[in-house]
Amino acid sequence: GENVEQHPSTLSVQEGDSAVIKCTYSDSASNYFPWYKQELGKRPQLIIDIRSNVGEKKDQRIAVTLNKTAKHFSLHITETQPEDSAVYFCAARDTYDMRFGAGTRLTVKP
Amino acid sequence: GAGVSQSPRYKVAKRGQDVALRCDPISGHVSLFWYQQALGQGPEFLTYFQNEAQLDKSGLPSDRFFAERPEGSVSTLKIQRTQQEDSAVYLCASSFTGGNTEAFFGQGTRLTVV
Image (cartoon, rainbow over all chains, first blue to last red; front, side, top):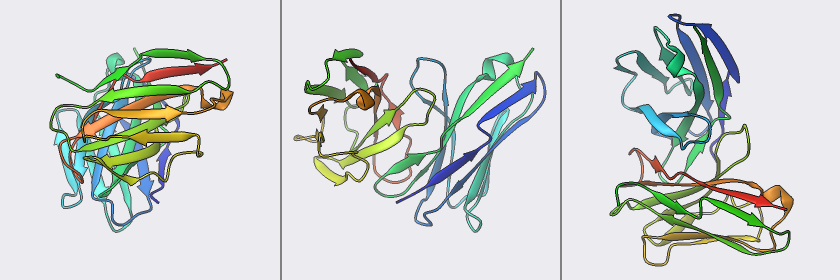
């Protein structure tokens, strides 16, 4: 089955700096790569996603890149704000299942 | 409904008890996932349904875990003879179709086995 690796496990940045989280996946059949943000005690919420026919997608301060050949994808957050502090999960989905990385705890220091 | 709904929100079970966790997906959503999330960890895949068909149950940790979705809508995750290691948040997610569409999560059921 699919295996998703996520790095780093924790990330601390100064407000206004950029944050980058990287994931790799193993199953070449995966074709959809969402990123979720989870605040303490709450459900995961989708923040951005990318499909396998696209190399990059941007939504305001958030961007995701995908390299299908190398089987890795990354989340980029620019101009970070304290409210960006949360745990971020990447995921890879094929026809039948969706597997998650172990998560990155992002702390944005004011 | 407006979103994915799970019940109960919290469940305390004595070791050895059976529990049943319910998930009401968004109306019309074909795909339904169950995940187990231990404290500080990512969601671990348990099982996947497309309508009433359970297409992948490779993540169920033991034969004590059983999931069903008999009419292709509401799903129930049943855990028999609960053990302390079953303590976790159980998350349900649904999406409109299979493949490359957004999955929406419920608020989860926190199971504590004492």
